[in-house]
Image (cartoon, helix red, strand yellow):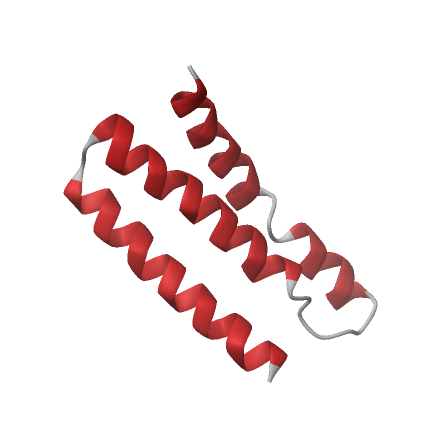
Length: 79
């Protein structure tokens, strides 16, 4: 039951990760770090789901690439 809930948490995080960006853009600010952080959280949830529930290599590889790309984005935001 918890394994499937983790997948749903990832879905929520990924679908709503742009809300902080929309708010910041409307105020004339730059992208907040919460946007890629929510993406990484959602992708980690999806990665867990793809490894332990679905056992699907394609989703595992895709989620791993997304985590690496968003981590790189966070690096460039923070530095």
